[in-house]
Length: 155
Image 1 (spheres, rainbow, N blue to C red):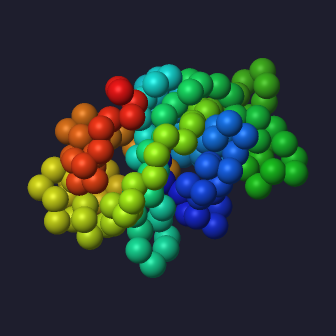
Image 2 (cartoon, one colour):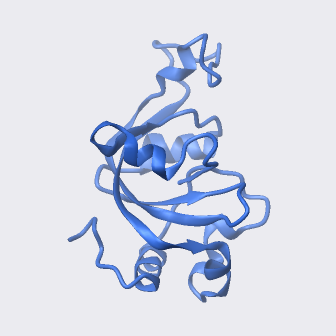
């Protein structure tokens, strides 16, 4: 999952009650489909900060609630409001995520670029603006191996 720290940061997640927050405001159909249909409770998350001087994977989280309708789409005061979405016909979905661990130091874009497995990740593709992208098991393990960590989702 990718976010600009000025919008929602890994530190924001850590400060959330129970270290749990909803991943809301996604307004791309491809990412919505992942949230609604593919992401499952217990799935691991690489939390990536974008649009900063040194983009990087800051830490690990996990999904604690599977896809459900994104209520911010119905909130007139929300920057994520969508008049086409309704409680009867929700268009947008979100999941709840929970902090697991910091990556210390973070895994930078340069680290990703120089790694044979990680250089091909979705987040590395030019022009990719999705805030939710799949990570395969090899990529997950490679990130953990870079920081000599046990898998906190499986452990």
